[in-house]
Length: 129
Image 1 (cartoon, rainbow, N blue to C red):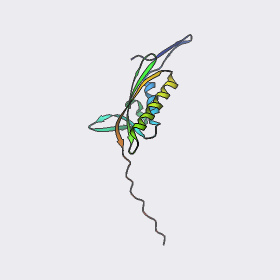
Image 2: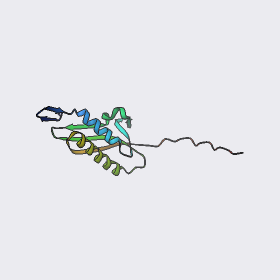
Image 3: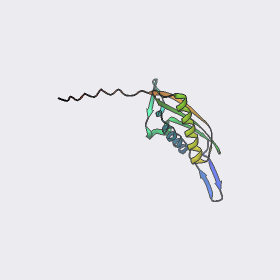
Image 4: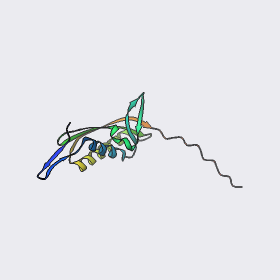
């Protein structure tokens, strides 16, 4: 789709699709319970991406006035997935609409995996003699 444009008497404003994708990715990772964005499933394992690759887990379709977003995320183990998904949808919608003026018609959240906590070795007990 083409970049959204807004015409004023001073000229034209164009917002690149990548800008909308970065806004969506940042807004999604701000939500508690989100471990990171997912670059897709390779070999049956969801690949977790860091903050450097936020647009890799985001697909946007942007028109003249509206946007639709698909997010591919990995959640933390133990969270309520429906609650985290709703929070992602609300945060992404709010961020895009506030920053760009576009109307977000849908935010689809695709849970690609669950991030398990790492096992840390037990700390040695200190002895008092």
